[in-house]
Length: 319
Image (cartoon, rainbow, N blue to C red; front, side, top):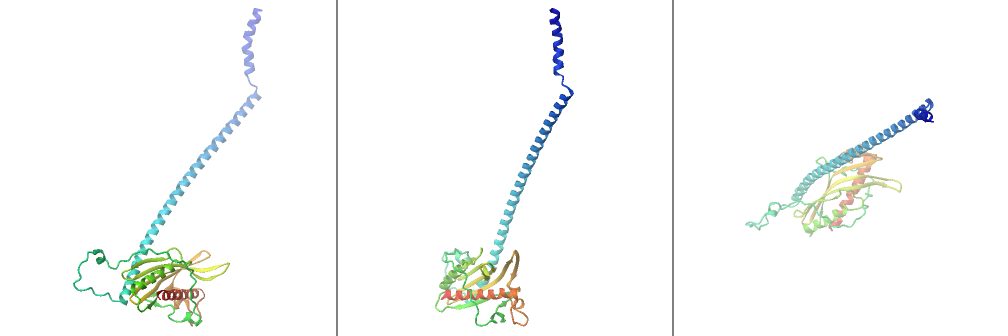
């Protein structure tokens, strides 16, 4: 019995070792399972890396886009500032022209002999300052008062229909209103231009830009739709830009229209024109003066009609 127990104690480890040893088939199967697990782990790692790279690229793209957007906004703001400065300088030149025109209409009264200082130094140093007006609320009206010349089909062909002075297209008219004071005419002119620049066809930037109450002068920059034709399916128009200047004196007011330009968009193709090289006799009328040219001619006709409407409205407003 004792020998039997000793034999069993000696054989048990050998039996356990025999049970722990895998067959070649089992080893192959185990190796395959480990390989599949390694491949799955590798794919998971690749996916995680790809996701991290994609997120990094997306974050970088967002950062770059935000930076580009900020730079674009800054550039746009700088451009608007530059445009505003340029527009201000141009309006100052226009204002000087109005002042000169007003001076021609009426000589500046001589100062009284022996005038004494009254303490208003600012007014004495700058008695004719130009300011940006605060426009009152005006009744918005439709820009449909354009007058059509019906007396003659050849009206638009006549020399001088689009006048030029100093190389520029310019219309000027002096309206006489006997008995009206310069202040009264100024107020009426200001109200008229305010209403005109707030009518339905007006665009951004159309406004009474500068006023000089002491010299009874006004400068308005107008941006509007000049409509050639309109139907249910289509609208043919151009952006029409121009400057209106008013100079008032006792019993008279002078209106000037100049700086005429056009921005014409046809199916995304934008063309810019100046009146001097587009609606004048040389560019809008054929050599025999028998007809208007097809495209520039329609600009000439619509511009003359619009000018007539504005000047007629101005005359009516001063009554």
